[in-house]
Image: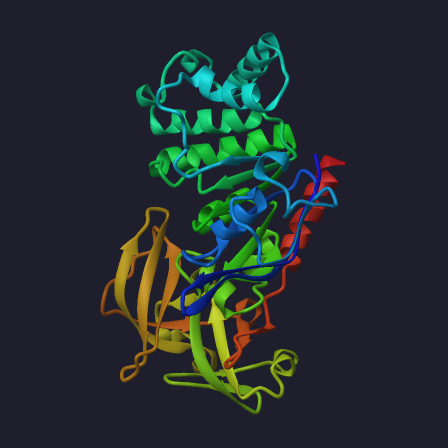
Length: 387
């Protein structure tokens, strides 16, 4: 196995009169055996990046390397890469066994016995041995997805590329396959790049996630780092469901002032935004405190709000509120599913300072993020218990 790296990789498409920059100067290093998820909205350059690595598109500039060896000038069959497509791309006239064997027959000098043994071992790993003599048309979506994975596994490649392989499955099967894919990748230890627009897949599957927008890499980090320490407003708003709440405010001394409420900052946090006038305050729905009886709370840190809609999610409820009587400011709060609030109810909301994020109101760059000290403590306890 080997590491995969992109150095200044750029792809520009010529659309007659205009040039379209699909991928812009991406630097990315994936360690040997690491599972990295490339995530972002539709049209952000995810699949183009994957296709350049696979050799299906040629970079306009930059270098792509596997194990330190540049591959951007090599043909796809020379790159020791196996790719699983969104459509699975199985040959409909071939059996599962023939689909999985075809690449080995065409690109290796393995004997028939070696190919048969390799295919059967991969089929056993994936739990599809009983399907080997069936054709794709007789398989469910989940079974076809396993066959497509099997066809990649038998190649024993340096790098796996997976282009939204779960998007055609129903929600329950997709959740099951997420777990199975992680277990499979852990067992095989193959360097893997997985492309998706689904933030749940990114957060639950990747050792690290790379977030793209408009062809540019916004942040590369662990799921926890990207969620709790976003590099900018885009990352903060893209990760999380429901999305982070944002408020555009103006810094006046040590206080953020806006439409419907003011927010006083401690000296330590105010120092992080010193010199910035326009500031965006962000807070995740699960971090907001709701006070049922606003008369029982201190006025200086509680913001009056009105419940507009309550969406039950089972163990949680999403509460949509409006701040003040004459503003358009609104926010979403997640509360316990057993807690009852009704539309029209007057409540108070509080933004704990240790949970807020502050961004430059012009550039969107992060100025202050919440700290992960509690997460570090959990990791220390886990380490101590396993010692």
